[in-house]
Length: 275
Image 1 (cartoon, rainbow, N blue to C red):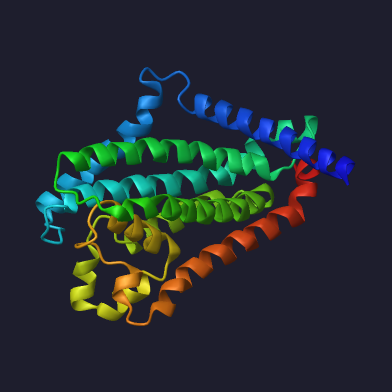
Image 2 (cartoon, rainbow, N blue to C red):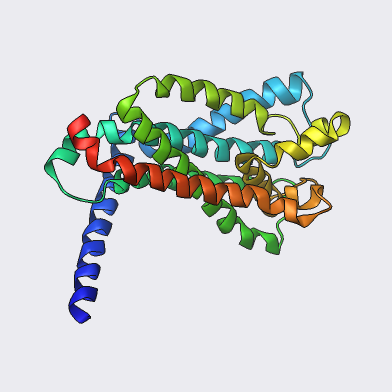
């Protein structure tokens, strides 16, 4: 029994060391050669926020009528940047690390997990910026901020599950990268990021409810609600009278992750020879 536990401990210790080194390497290579380096992880979502704020809030008047909407927009931009980056980079992770797969023996899923964890580090930095902005604006911080780590964990699990599915498919079909770009663009407009959900809810209340059954939309709205403005940001928990409906996106997140893990493990042994 002790020998088995020792072997198990050594196995996962080795996996953790590989995971840690890959996360460090991927995060460093991401900004290698750039003058500002890791600051780009903050500047990119801020620049995107500025563009969307000027175009959609100032010119097109996309707003929910509350003073918290600009910081809500910034928060949504950061969360979407993480989801988009984690799934897109996770998609190419196995192919990009094909040489490593042929040289070193370790659990293959670590490659995808390390790439998505690098994006998670950027998200943590960005959420810190959101909190700092919130301190100087009208954000309303309550005890619900304690729920944000759980929301972020759900978003990470969702992104990791999708990344495992996409990375497996990308090994065999390189067209997946182009298809996923289109899907991401469609999802960006289908999730209430640049526009408030109240705009949809006002004219199409049924569609607004249906939108929040999407796990990506649900978790983004939950983070906004718990972190910034519990009074002004609706969630799947407040929009549905029957609370059982609120568990649908949570269940979908778990199912997507489990399916992604199953697909990835079913094909991971063939990755080295296919590549």
